[in-house]
Amino acid sequence: MIPNLFKRKTATALVLGGALSIAAIACGTDNGAPAAGGNGSDNDSVDPTPPPTSSVESGYDAARLALEANGSVVVNTGEEPSGTFNTPLTKLLVNGESVELYEFASSSDASTAAARVSDDGTLVSDADGGPAVAIDFLNPPHYYQQDEVIIVYTGGDAEVIELLRETFGEEFAGDTSPVDPGAADSPGYETVLAPAPIDSVEVIEDPDNPGFFLLRVTSGLPGGCASFHDISVEQTGELELTLTVLNRVPAPGELIACTQIYGMVEHTVPLGSGNDNLDTCEVYTVRWENHGENESLRFQVTAPNVRCEAPDEPIDNGDGPVVAPIISDLDALLFGLRALGIEVEIGEDGGSSLFDGAISQVITINGERIEIFSFGPGDGALRAASGVSPDGFEIANGPGGSVTNVLWISTPHFYLAGNSIVLYVGVNDGIISALDSAAGPKFAGPGGEPVGPIGDKPDPLPLPPQMDTVLVPAPIVSVGDIMIAESFPPQYFVEIVSAQPNGCNLDAGWDVEIDGTDVIVTVQNTEPANLAVVLCTAIYGETTHNVRLGSGEFESGVEYTLIVNGEVSDTFVAQ
Image (cartoon, rainbow, N blue to C red; front, side, top):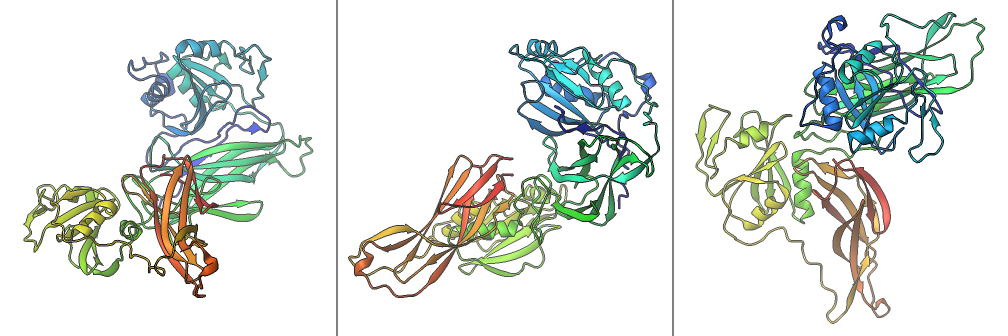
């Protein structure tokens, strides 16, 4: 158990109405990583000359590499179209402190923008000759330039200021005075610690480091005399984290006149990854107290190339978009096959496995056996697949391990489905075609001999002869949750139940169209073209459709809207 994932004391805050948002945290871990402002060496011994930047990298990449070369921990916490300058803004966490990076098209453009900043950094003139914008900081700002990048730091951490000066040189605007790491401001009256109000909490993933999770917190400052003091995230249970945010406020009995301005502080807290201090595929609960009430959110730890079982309950990652649950390889295969109209039966456990460390499960299609070997988190399936000979008749368990020669009774077909291996031994071309579509890439075994297709949707019962029919939208009974199978690329499915109101309505299937960020599903029935001359039985029916929405058509990080028969049903964020 990790007793303290993150802890940071004393920071800055931004009063509502300011132009810049200021993060107020730093990274202190129990695994030896540098704490806030720390680079593993004594600041007095640091060469003040900025190191030369790479001649290959430029802009954001060069700035990040320069910071990391000086021993700092850098996390990308998000991007915005623009901020103080009319150019894209990237928000970084540098040793736990919020730093804003503005990237321009060229060094000359960055220099032109820098010339618009007043010496003290509180005024930025308009690029088109309009009035200057006044910025109200709670701490003196620090502006730096490296080639086509302008870096802005509005916090008060002395070690981070020294780090930025070491990396990018002296400020071109803002506070250029020497810093005293031991200095502390005293308000002149007695103060006490009090829980801070929590305005928002969400779990996000580091854009530059998939699988590394961050907790984004916005806490409040109820009045001008309140100041942020401390934020910490501690592991208080096997799968439980506790968030604590404290403010420093006047002690009871202190007669202090305080403004009624409500301020906010934005914190980005590194939680870790499944490769570090969290367990991949587990669902963690983050708890905190807010205005005397207990609040919480849950998130699932995922990792690249690892597919996890869907959680028992829906995941709510806070104020961010709700991400669809991730389903197991077996569920993904079943969804894919059923979306093709194929009936699948779940069989027995496969018993002893061909592959070390894998769990075997059998399914059947038209009585033919298909085996799924599921591996734990990691690259076990990929490594196992690399040990299978191209014809599928030899299987090596691990590098330098024993080689098993298998005498199959028919032709083997091996597929890599996420972190599982799917095996079919046979020559049914219909099954082979279905697995080619639903199971992922085939990595071993030749194609089979065609013996007749399977899995075609049964034709609807015919209406009376010589009766013209038309397609009509089917009544929708229910639309299930969108499910994501993290294959390569991810596949998206949804279960839709449609109705046939009477005996003359027959299910006619579904169609999917992607228009921008709209995923449009049309479910239809057939009915007689002239209902006035047809006597229909009052038999009500329903049809369940396992609809495959698509895979590589979706752009990662973009929110899509699911529309079923003209009605908005759900939204999801592409993985």
